[in-house]
Image (cartoon, rainbow, N blue to C red; front, side, top):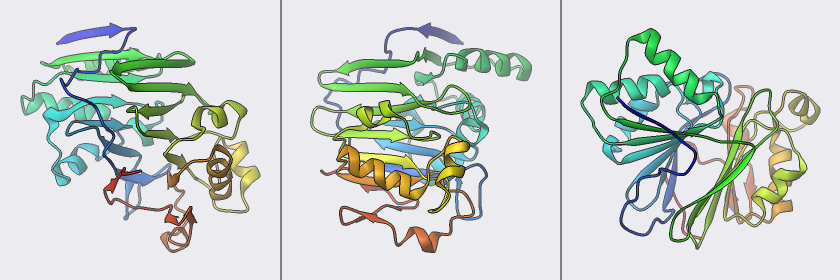
Length: 268
């Protein structure tokens, strides 16, 4: 295994402009999977190559079903180490090894991601044959990847280190925020984003419960989107207590906030 722990960005240079093109959730359930959806993971298309945000269980099989080529998935951004967000990471890396996919991959996440990976590899007798880069985020960081493409990370307020991510290609931005309560820096971080992906674990009327559990309600998410002047809001990370019928009635700026597992173009 080629293993590198680095403090500067090692996102693979693709030799062309990186443009945010689409987003597709592989799972949107919060806490536990349901018969309708796995837990948190999504694919972002940046010009024919792909990054994952979180990697819950079933991510690998859902990528296969979506016909995403593994060799073009070059980065995985882990928000935090709760199992409903990264329980599929070790299996993903293992299956990639088993099928002899040798493409380099970069993992981004909290500073305990490195030790988590090494411990799992040691106890499972797993030595990946392809290059793995690991980037450990501190409280707030920004990287310029290529030309105008930048990635920002912000530590949010959760029960353990957890990060929000903002991707910007020079023309449009996508901000992904999960597992947090409201706090001042979040509003500045998401200001004027084109697409805001926000968790909404709790239904309306449970705002205090959401705050106590380091989460947001649907009403919280709508308020944040309006305050930061987001062009579009997509909700994710729903408690099983929130029915899909109620989600279908939630909209923002004339667009539905629930997209399920459908691929959505980022054509703002």
